[in-house]
Image (cartoon, rainbow, N blue to C red; front, side, top):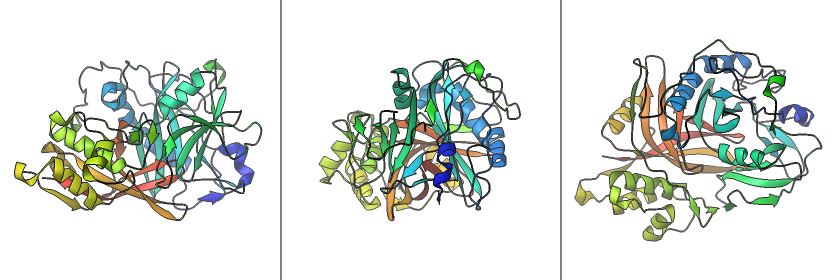
Length: 400
């Protein structure tokens, strides 16, 4: 992570919520956002972004446009487009501003509204991308309720959208030392420099110019059923979504939410199960847990006597991912990142895959945002961006 207060005004850029012609994947040039004068192996560059937009990102966007209901988008979407990219700013208690030069985000728009977030992160020379509704509904709601601009801030693993009056709306949290009142506005502790912002609602998109990537058609199709290109092989589970909230407050119980979702998928009569239920039944506090706790909780709902075999495992290979999903079994995925000197973990549930001769994608249920996401899996690894941090899939709990 690079600290450079002199680039504050370029880090917090205006993000344009507008419609771009549907026939191409287009986005604004990153030259004004990223300081290419100081780079490392994992600094994301314009050429990185160009390549991703022509390949992996195109696949992700096509799948969302063709199958919006699977991602939790309740209305038909047309003419998906990308707004200008943005980054989360990280503020220290002394007022220093930093950003992760290996991470960028794009708002995915339809009919002038933000419907999803496309995130790119570069790690060990590889660019990983993921797509889901994530915090898009909150951003869209704030902008539509009159916020003229918003700044996005990562406060040690807690994400906020801040308006010009310095009111902070919570987006998500992976910091196990904090509880988070979702979408509740609070006065933020850091004063924003006047005029800085990175999201803005614009009324006339025709006043902005975009530089386009090589044309790649984003298909328009019916949202009924999954519509797939002939060259792709896909298997997705009709998977339940479970959040990690209790009484409107987000607790660090992603593991319990993922456990509840797995149990609900395997035994539909458990449709009522929540993350709180899992904690209460297993006698676990509303806090983080180890994979052995996940095994114990799953064995309660999916006992050996019923033919289930639950066990801890490493990161799944492509072959194992396919065989597991083909057997109609989800997998608990645990990912980690070091935040403020502490290793933090986040639990999700693997629920599908898609592959071709050139790419391999995975689908997962993310309880932090309570949504289904699709993401790239490369070199035996899955990594994703959360604010200014990069999480890496480190181990699993499998069902046989």
